[in-house]
Image 1 (cartoon, rainbow, N blue to C red):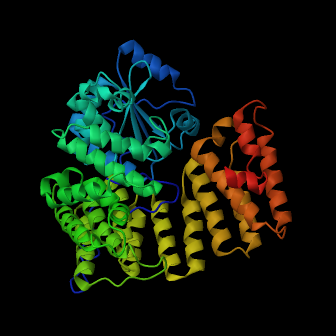
Image 2: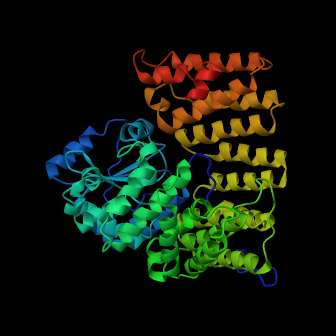
Image 3: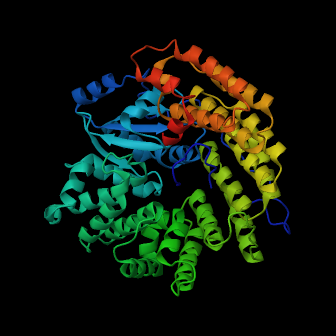
Length: 530
């Protein structure tokens, strides 16, 4: 599985040129209901109190899934976890709540539960207190194990963390350490720790974790390195960290236990552990590549994970190149990329999983410089994709990589026009406006038409102005204000602000949504600070 989907993040083969192309895979049609054998509760509106009242009365935990129809990792979860018989059976032990980002009230609920990235999965006690956030990036079998640990746990992850950071850490049980290690730290949203404390706290956890809990200790150590790399903070003992990672990479079993971290964050970790020009760089990169080779060939991993392993090899090779430099990859690596994509395309038959696999495969081809092959794969998939508008964004990115701004904007516009669901349309539409401002700032008429179209679709209800919706609108507002920094587009911005004011005026005066709505076109400095 993969990292969370951020707004407009384009996820991570056609047969080799020397071979006859394989016939297209037969795709299983998408089912109208999401895994009907699971008794999903789908909240109606922004109030979920009745669900927790039901859970408390039945003394059952609550499993909250937050996702979107178009989201590749969400569809990977549906194809590899939610369709498992053991998950369906286990769902009878909890109240399964399905929260799609486009349903009424979903964005307000997302703000309530502090969820951002799709997918986020949270396990709650019957009384509504949070137990843990489940890791969507691990393989399905490991996911089921962590879910089982969460359901059986007496302590929440927050309670275990508090103990682990004190001299009483030795009182924690093995399952407590595993839940800490497999907590979805990337989706924490400051529920356990402020972001600025995450790296140091993970380092303390890794040191406190009993070494006989090798897998948990390794995972915590790797997560600490990732957090430090992302925060650009120093490691307390870089020599020990480097040595530990070398041991993990060199042991096939230990590396496989943490394959998702090594694949998804390899370039970040390598740059921190072995800076460019250091004596450690070449041997560490070599060992990393050997581990990635094993993952790419591992039939026990999903096709998406195997594709990501090849993508990670490319990322390591591109690590020290200038931002706009075009790398030249050797023929063997290009052949590996093509073969990995061809296998994934041929063997992935579930429509849910193809929504994850095909964009990932196309992105691999794009990263390898095989833009025409990436385009061909995506265009062949458009008629049968669950959400083809996501694929159109990858096509837009390919055109941008070619330097073809007009075609890139046309694909981005088409993606918006084809998108479905109020939150998705707001996300795609505001993204289209931002791309216009970046690539064609002189086209005032097109920018005004697009931005006005986005605002025209806003529903004048408080739920509209929360979470992803709010962030998308605020970013669009900041970009438009920056575009008008010298007052050269004042008439357009004034018209758009008036259009939005008419929507804001319909919101309840005391609701924070009204302030959020009114703040979209406020002073540029304030917007930048936000």
